[in-house]
Image (tube, rainbow, N blue to C red):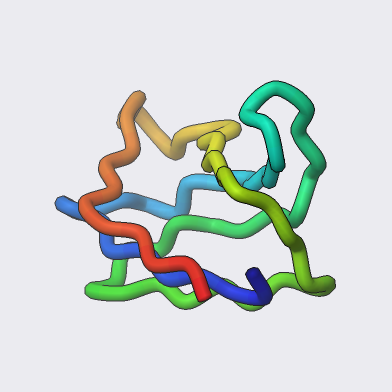
Length: 77
């Protein structure tokens, strides 16, 4: 994976996040950081190509009084 796109399901106010990849769903490698913006689609380009059978997204913080981030769809490519 060299990039991915995601679509928020409602307004998000810039949630800092990270993405990890894994071949076995147990040992994870950090692949990059990004911010979930309040747009119809967010495309994120990783600094280095990451390979793995699985990927996971962690929202590391929220903004203001919004203690949630909603992601409706994710496309990896």
